[in-house]
Length: 300
Length: 228
Image 1 (cartoon, rainbow over the protein chains, first blue to last red):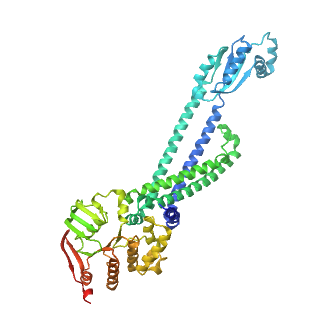
Image 2 (cartoon, rainbow over the protein chains, first blue to last red; image 1 turned 60 degrees about the horizontal axis):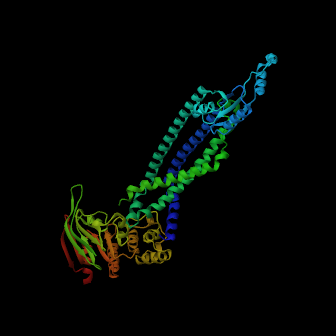
Image 3 (cartoon, rainbow over the protein chains, first blue to last red; image 1 turned 120 degrees about the vertical axis):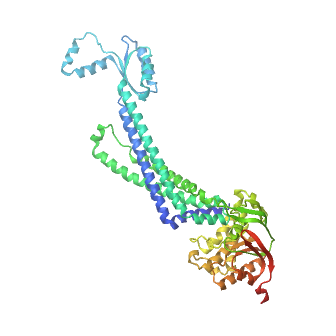
């Protein structure tokens, strides 16, 4: 097809948005609400994940070194722990560090410790597990290191958190999937109504010899244009809503921290990816929805 | 050239719209197809523009075997003919110019050619001055002429005109047929479907009468306009 005719069809598609302003507005509004719902749900899920990660980060393994282990063995244990990808924040506590900590805990009774002939505290390592679902496996690996006496792990805490995370992930995925399906159904019905209103125009084009591609292109452009506008609109509204919640969060920081929420993801961190995703999703829904809805009117 | 061989059209409703129709229209002819409502004229037109295919038999138009024409070739075939519908079938939101230029865009013509061709065909139907008007602002007669201009835009070898005078007063009807005759004299085959016998008797020529789905009359008769 000649460039001039492609340009003509693209212009025709964009001008149709204004010519059919009522149906365009209906499609725009439905797309806007659908995308707004989905982007708010995505932001909610991202923040829930942050909360879960913050809570999970409080787990701690205590690795006791065997009494009488050599410096080389301690260095080996340290080396193995630091190179284990399932562990993070590995810290070494010497016998002296451990005794000092214990002395602090004893407070006014700490003088009793002065009567000890020998430091009874073991050398220890503290570390956090990066993936709680692998805690048992990680503990088994550490227990197998030469010179390790014992590993203490918060199995119940980890099990409970893994269950909560799986439940939260399942519910949020179901909510998101439902929202997406409902959005697609509503959007496609609205677009179908819009295309139905112009079925006569489509049939005329067929009767005078237009190919399906020629007829679809302006509708495709029109649907995509409305979708991009709706995506940008949904992004703007998400920004306003999110900023309001962010302000509320700032005013009641201590309250939120009780629930493990130490900070929402700042909107500035996701501003451009969210705009791109909203516009892309809007364009895809608008364009594909329009073209699919045209199908039966092209059979002339 | 239009040729129908042993064509039968049987609708799912049980109606036999055409029964064993054999017909040949040569290039350059002007043919009236007449008959009462429900006689089968519209079915014949639908066959000629490949809106439907025959239940049995074969239909050839402009070298295309329409009975076997594949879906992706229909658009190309339709661009080789011009059709004027009874209810015009113009895109009402388009201007007169856009309605006519649209078929040239479909045929992938250049902007330069479109700028030359559209005024030419609009002048042919005496609507050059209405090029920028919205179609919905025109009278029925003017819309009919826009439909003719659109049908002629691609310079088709065959022009099929369905009940073009149905919405016109007698004077405009006669003027319209005169215009179609003029187009025919320039070499375009014209098939005009009508139920107005007075008009047919006045102009004469080859007349095909359809009754209950069968051709009952196919002859050339002299017209009164030739006598005048």
